[in-house]
Length: 397
Image (cartoon, rainbow, N blue to C red; front, side):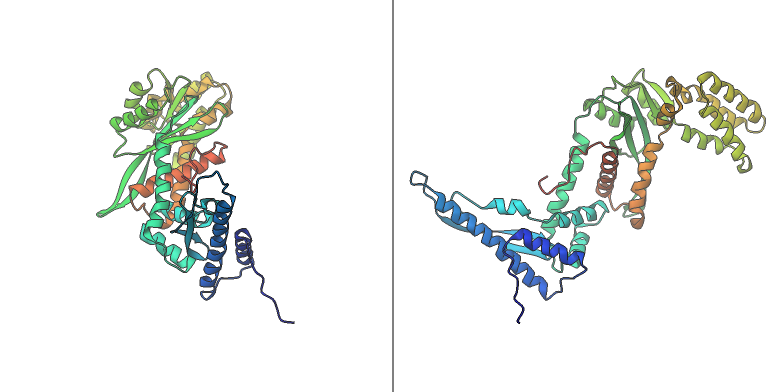
């Protein structure tokens, strides 16, 4: 008995069959791609034509007269490639609901385009990737339009109003490299992370800077303040110890207690000690950092100084000079609370993810690619903390 061909009359069914084929490892050969695109175009245009017919048939005697008014061209990007559609219309109606239902581009294609830009690819390179995936070129205008939605989301993130709810701010500058015509250029990224009343840590914002100077930090912090982060709920600010940031804080947040980052301080002290003594020095520093009370921390610091002063006076001075600010976190009674606020490690952990994602590239392509990938990583990390991203990367952005 001859096998009968199945007729697919709905777009959802067509897409489900496509996904099922892909799940089973079946590939669309080049000979089938044009036929698949043609079939989908016929299904969609049939639905749109039916909507126009229904619109005209539903017009009552008292309704304003209407008639067909040709068509216009639109494109739908799918796993089969770029489908060009002739969208019918009347003088008063266009069946755009059909297009909105299935979008001008499939979500998977948009995600591919956005991922390419997040990884720093140029418009031309993203187009080449899509050519390999879809078997048909995609216009630079289409790729640029999708990239614009990402850049708009990044810009909106940097402009959004801020809630003044954070108990603790953690501020740090992390150096990243990007390409220039004269080799890699290393520049700092200034970052603000906030500890919320529910204990969750949120990247509030970041800024690509020329240097970690007081002027750059004042600009960054001033922008946060103008957008609503006045600091009325702040109990303390944890900092990496950079001179520019320390100089900017009295202007931006006067009167707020400062906590020096223990992780940075331990690295600084160990840098003044012979490697053979690292373990012993580190144990002494941990005894101070993990002391149950502030007085016991002071006692541990005296023991540390007595032991190492003769051999490493510079290391002991490095600790002693900032001891009061290292002990600010003892305003919190439990070790768990102090651990949450005594370092800027949460910022550095997020930058490890930035570097992991960009390791194949070596360096960022340009300033825009730096902004894009940090936005993608930081908003993802916020979402993993249960903090919803304020700007979703969708086709309607």
